[in-house]
Amino acid sequence: MTGNIKDSFKLALAQLNPVVGDIEGNLERARTARAAMGEAGADLIAFTELYLTGYPLEDLVLKPALQRAAREACEALAQDTADGGPAILMGLPWGEPPFVYNAVALLDAGRIEAVRYKNNLPNYGVFDEKRVFAAGPMPAAIHFRGVCLGVPVCEDIWAEDVCESLVQAGAEILIVPNGSPYWMDKQETRYGVAETRVAETRRPLAYLNQVGGQDELAFDGASFVLNADEELAVQLPAWEVALALTEWRREDGRWHCLPGQIAEVEESDAANYLACVTGLRDYIDKNGFPGVVLGLSGGIDSALCAVMAVDALGADRVHCVMLPYEYTSKESLSDAEAIAKALDVRYDIVPIHDGVEGLSACLKDVLKGPPEDFTAENLQSRTRGTLLMAISNRLGPLVLTTGNKSEVSVGYATLYGDMNGGFNPLKDLYKGQVYALSRYRNAHRPKGCLGPDGVIIPESVLTKDPSAELKPGQRDVDSLPPYPVLDDILNCLVELEMPVPEIVARGHAPELVQKVERMLYLAEYKRRQAAPGTKITAKNFGRDRRYPITNKFRERL
Image 1: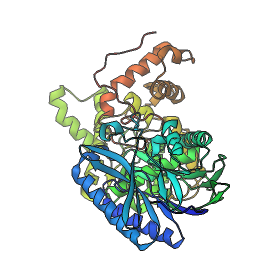
Image 2: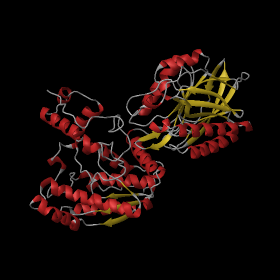
Image 3: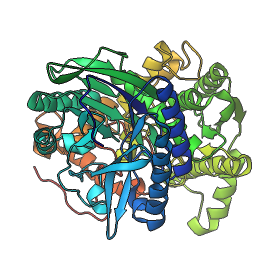
Image 4: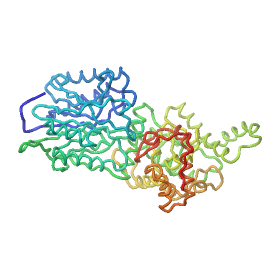
């Protein structure tokens, strides 16, 4: 829509939490946001990438019925703009058979005024857009009420071509709708990319990102505006829904954003913790579970998982169960009780002796004697898993599994035992990170968290030797390298894809590196059957790292 040149412009940024497939709900939230920003005097309200259907859609976007429902919702929303209120910049899939595009539509004056397609489709890491979307042509600028807008979508700003083309077409302000998931240090990377585009184009840039959890991804929001001199004019908070009205002025023929809110954006342990809580909360709530149940063993992993669950859902939706056997120490019993008391959750003790002995008796003739070694240990774990699943079946809460990335990497977990469950908040946290986040949570109560202040995880849990307690005197270091050593080797193998000789050069014993590599490959079949969990690191298992189960390759020194 063309219009006269103007010298002021009010742009509302809608940093919302869409639900994939909930087009009606997303539409209603968009209308509520528009009404609020209309009262504030906004000229235009912008929403995030594919907001109307939620993001990421994966193969769901290929369904003609979904494409049709999204188009109908977009048309209905366009009709709303006939009221003279704010125009809308809306993200949605746009079907043009035989293709579907990742699109943005400008809605104004009761009509769909313009549609632009994403040009650069990411196809790495967690992204698989070339599988489902067609790449659009180089997008044209959009003339809106006297302002010429460029709307590169997410990946379109990670290379210079789209922004350069938009500026050549006359774009004065760049508005970038994103579905950019969190991983460690991601915000600094975003700033760097945005600053580079601003420096190249000499145009201000509004970076708008969604917030919330979707399956294994957590979106942190943290939307911002950079002026043409790369100055940060507006910074929205991370990890929370936010609406912000940004005000713009044209001076000497160029637009700049007036200084606005500058929220503090969490980093390091604080950001990782909130990512885990956000991912857990939205997985439970968006899928309609009444709450969660987990085995509280007295160890560090289940302790942190319980705290995260209460922070995400509240104490009344968390059920902790201690499942002791003859090898469960008195210290574990007292530690588990202390954690449950601090969290004020329902806490039950369900001894597993009869279950383990009953299963052992069932197997006696088949095994020609009682189960021994790993068989006996795994029976304990699987008895616990079965009991937790029975509680879930009867009472309704989802079972949380609590294994960390160090254990998941090398298969130090039991299928159908401690791996039983529907979600794992710790899945992408190495053991060292579990300790770091436990100490962080003892010292801080992060924003939006529903758990108590103060120390929740006893110091005894943080200092005792990790143990599965499946046999007398058992310690994790009997089967695994010390966790700081293991975590470094795994980070090199998984995140960095570092050659084995280079890992050895860091000071690790060659035979140990090769052993860990072998364990990593052999555990792939277990990981394929593991519960989903929130992505925290640069390369999580599943979406990022996809290795064959049958795999004889090993590096040689």
